[in-house]
Amino acid sequence: MIAERCRYQDFNVLLVEAIDESIRDLFSPQVLETMYTVLLERYDVTRDELPYRLETAYDILKNVFGIRGGRAISRIIASRLHQKLGLRFEEVPNLDLMDYIEIAKKKLAQVPFSNLPTNPLHRLCTQQELGSPHKEPPALPSPDS
Image 1 (tube, rainbow, N blue to C red):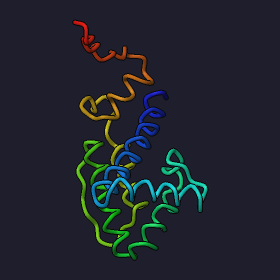
Image 2 (image 1 turned 45 degrees about the vertical axis):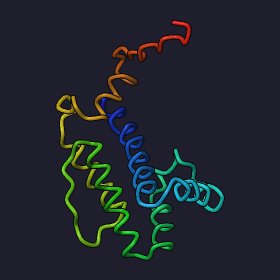
Image 3 (image 1 turned 30 degrees about the horizontal axis):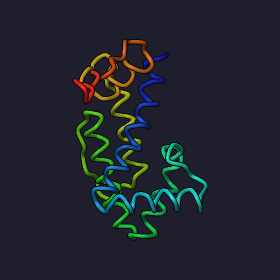
């Protein structure tokens, strides 16, 4: 089903955005850039592959910040993802990044796709995958005008 495929492709886009924003906001753009450099050079993981290799990213967080720090950062990422998905986030002690991502996927699967009109997934899917017209932003006036 197109809508289901689109739902999970866009889930991954929003997941990477949540990771990027969380690391950038917690630390800095330079730390985010360093994280991706380490993921690529040491683990051969690109930004696009991150949703499929979350355990590797979580291992890096644990190695740098310890188990408690890795879990705290995971909660921040998960909270941001839930916010992007329009889902309610519930903090649960001792969960790691992969646990929170699975919870988000299960919650998302329970919501009928048609009930997500204000959800970023619905907007992305409607524009990209389901064929609704994508409106171009209005042109800026030329400096001569």
